[in-house]
Image 1 (tube, rainbow, N blue to C red):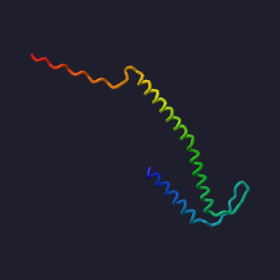
Image 2 (image 1 turned 120 degrees about the vertical axis):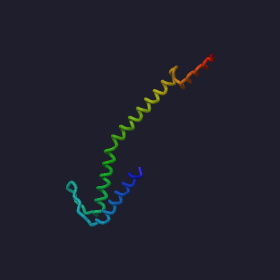
Image 3 (image 1 turned 135 degrees about the vertical axis):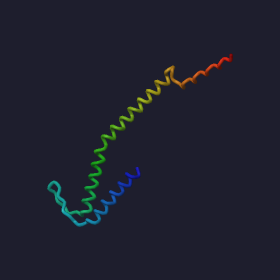
Length: 104
């Protein structure tokens, strides 16, 4: 977990360093619109858009996993409830002791 956090911080640091070193004004064109913006803002917006797209792409898998966890929890509850109702459920009996050997 620490490695992932370190990697995230490293990537964000590199993006920040890159954007601050490339802060010249640029013209941005999108769907026939054009406007002047700082390259820093364009890079930061593109990075944020990519992060949001990645997060949104991961939501379906996360929802499937959460649904599967709920199903397994219900199955476990049913199994433990069924085991508690069973007359054979309970702690295993201790094995009977061997009768003492007869002395002849």
